[in-house]
Amino acid sequence: MGKDKLRRFAENDTFHNMFQEQYLDLKEKGGFFLKGKWRQEFFKNDNPIVLELGCGKGEYTVGLAEKYIEKNFIGIDIKGARMWRGCKTSNENGMNNVAFIRSQIEIIDMYFGENEVDEIWITFPDPQLKKPNKRLTSNRFLERYRKVLKKGGIIHLKTDSQELYSFTMDEVLLPNKMNVLFHSNDLYASGLNDDVIEINTFYEGIYLKQAKPITYIKFEI
Image 1 (tube, rainbow, N blue to C red):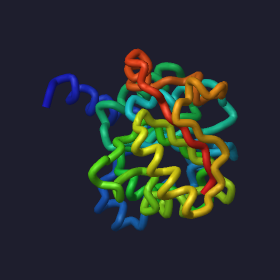
Image 2 (cartoon, helix red, strand yellow):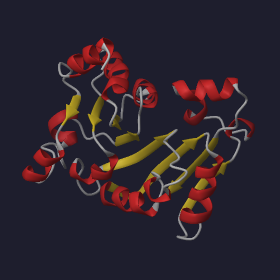
Image 3 (cartoon, helix red, strand yellow):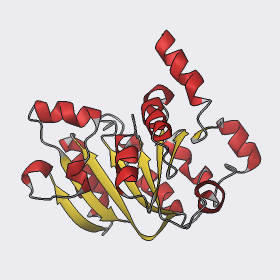
Image 4 (tube, rainbow, N blue to C red):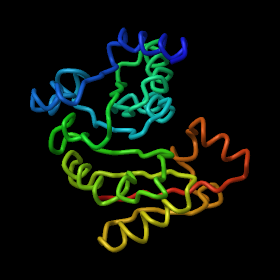
């Protein structure tokens, strides 16, 4: 492991808003200690909670938190060295509405209680082209989101993968009669102008330079 990664891992341990728990410890305790209590015990407010799943460097987590100080944002990813960037930025800027969790998304319901989450962003996840069941918009994962999202909670999927876009629309959302609020297989040609355009991830910038179409779906479970 490179020295830079080791340095980032060590610094992650010093951040008050970075949480890293072992699965066996979570299972033994019956879930994370803030489960169902994020607003009261960590954020100290009653504001909505928004998750970014597979957050990478946390561009959306931090970008949205800067724009919407009346909401709480939590980035989740398994790659601690990547999340270091977003967590460091939030600490340097004194942001009190941001947190990060290093964890597998499969166990999201061990971190959040029923109806605790208001909104979810899934930004440029691995499309898992050979393993549909591992896609973050598969029915397997939507069932997990349903456990923690409030009724009418919104999910955003932003991806460069036309395959993941088509899979989500044609094999998951439409067959299950879910309420699709907006969708486009070429976001930047769609005329939409809101947060999904204003905030870019590191990889999105690369795709845009390559003139690769970005797709977007906004839906309710």
